[in-house]
Length: 101
Image (cartoon, rainbow, N blue to C red; front, side):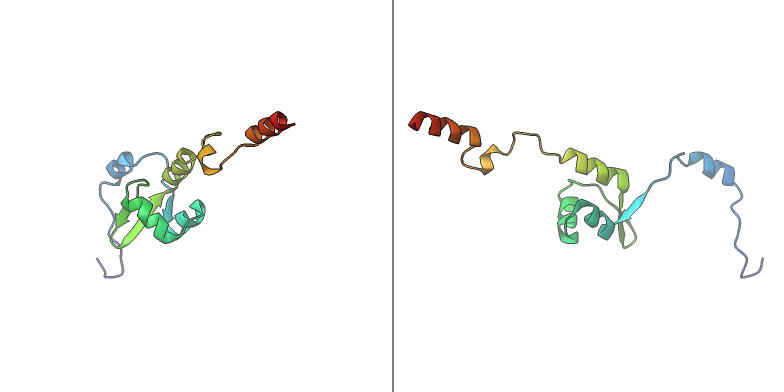
């Protein structure tokens, strides 16, 4: 074999059978951070706190696009769950005003 020739895998059919049918769509940390609308530093914190799975290949960290999308769906805020963030609702104000007049 010459130096510029690439060796062929002898048992390629067994390797192909072990591969899943669907392709994994990998995202870089910058791409995942952009998709989430956060900084890369925040993304690393989410990974470190096990809120978002990530994979390390050598020195490169990658995320699966479907897992990032699942994280986005799981982070959805339920209606009515943010009442603690504002002191009075509009309904409370209108009830108070009706009682005063």
